[in-house]
Image (cartoon, rainbow, N blue to C red; front, side, top):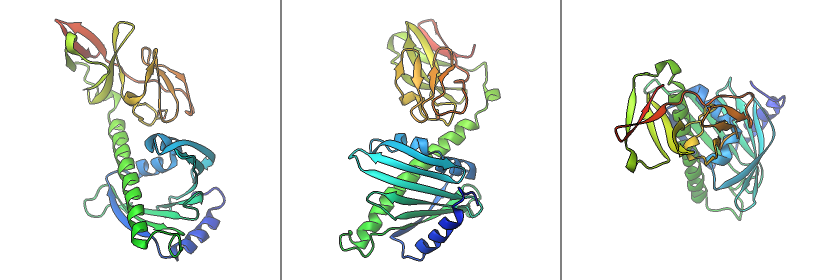
Length: 282
Ligand code: FES
């Protein structure tokens, strides 16, 4: 079991928690790979962006292959302490609420390879909360509905994100068809910024210093959406881990939380021809 040295302690705690009646349970098929699934759990840095505006900031006390311990701040100033424990051997993980209104609640998830259609994962989850039996707690059915709404939203958001990442990782540089080109429309009516797809990759078209330019719509690190990030001068800052990229040169000018610099990757040229704008490979 991956652990920060406290795995046994957490396993004992999990057994205690699971002896309690859960507030809510559910199942969901995730059309993702196990690699993307674990990667997403461990990537705590993307949480604030994905769940904004509800969350505004995140502090990480410690993290590793075993999971993480975080303090999340929501828009009302409320602090939520969260601890993730990832147990790859048992294909399970659980998030304990260590601070805030859901203190002592635990969300336990287990996955196995999907049986029905042979791809993806079947996830089974149980949410154990301290609210059951409390005099101030909402009725049990309300708690159940509330937890289901939150979990469904989280899983839907993250599943989509994992699928986007998988799709983009599967597009390799050697799959670029250098002969492919795209008519972006008449120069007079083209609106920027806009995104377009060339060689199965998505790009942002914009105008910079009176020149047309196209840069990747997804960050080369973990495929955060660069298309939604604001371009400031020649640079765009990745909303997830803070890497700063020069969209003209493709170079990484600031690594943010990355272990090393990454380049933006291949960028098509934008040329004007016969009154139309074309995206094509140099
Ligand atoms: S996704 Fe990590 S720096 Fe962009």
